[in-house]
Amino acid sequence: MPKIHDVDQLNTLHLDVLREIGNIGSGNATTALAKLINKKIDMGVPKVNVLEFKHVADLLGGADTEVIGILFNLSGDITGMMMFVLDQRSVRILVNLLMGREVHDDEAFTDLDLSALQEIGNILAGSYLSSLASLTNLKIAPSIPYMAQDMAGAILSVPAIEFGKIGDKALFIETEFIEGHDQVSGYFILIPEMTSFNKILNALGVWS
Amino acid sequence: MDQKMMIKVGMADLNTSKYPGVLTTLGLGSCVGITLYDPIEKIGGLAHVMLPDSTQIRDNQNKAKFADTGTIQLVEEMTKIGAKKNRLVAKLAGGAQMFAFQQTNDLMRIGERNVLATKKILGELGIPIVAEDTGANYGRTIELHTHNGVLLIKTIGKGIKEI
Figure 1 (cartoon, rainbow over the protein chains, first blue to last red):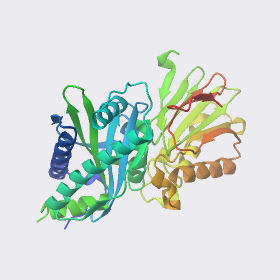
Figure 2 (tube, one colour):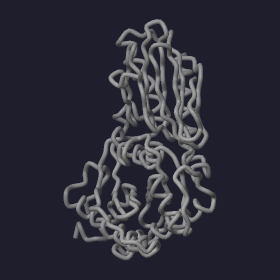
Figure 3 (spheres, rainbow over the protein chains, first blue to last red):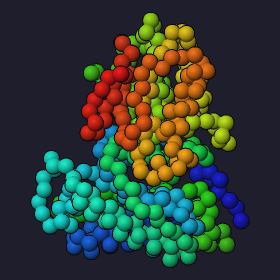
Figure 4 (cartoon, rainbow over the protein chains, first blue to last red):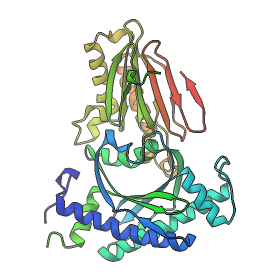
């Protein structure tokens, strides 16, 4: 069985498989979110971004764009990180929808708002990962959610550093979602570690 | 500020500039922004390093990725355009722990290790650290102004400061 040691070794077929994983995972997570807020949500075509580090920070609309990131460490057969990223405005709309009230953009989030948001993150990551687990028959266990509200570049530096330990490029499986009227938009990002690529590709019979 | 004078430095990247250039890096998280400045020639340099130690990593082609090799290369690039090594002064920013889990064990405290490694190499090179804004749990956007060596640090919700 061939082994992938570096992001650069992934060929078109491998990238297609990873894109399909993003499709299935974020499809499930989008459905879960739609049910949660009782709104129709559209999902973009998943992108497999293979980026040099100097371009990583541009991924979410610019390195100094303020975003809220909810991060999960993954353990089990597939290791790495899963992130759920939203801009300020989308978080405001989501929290208002969940809490059934109207709060304006200039007010800070309360602890309860942020705790509700973490719970949304939990549910969405759970549905993304469980579909992935049943597809591949591999175990994936997410950690508790960790949240940071800061610059996109600063948040993305955390997974980027993990890739930095093994190579000069990072791979992000990224799906954008958007809710039509109020325009809640954000990203699901799966960031598998290099050893997990081999397990995923093997489990899906790419090398058989 | 004239945008043309702004020189952007990405993650795992470095650059230098003579007066009147302004070197900037956006959204520093656990990475460290190492800035060096020669006040006589008004030459600045900025490296955005991700990891502490190139000797611990097999794939270490990109020197700007590491605190040790990145600092050495930054000094070389600056002396090429006229800076004198014995006049250089350093200012540091970044090295934050963006997520709480990064505090749980030593291996994950990458921001802190990046700062320590940077101080070690600057000490070996005999370059004094005149100011720093490192650690804590928030991101920083920094600008090194070559006309006076001021390092401007912008944050979200934690204000703007000059060091």
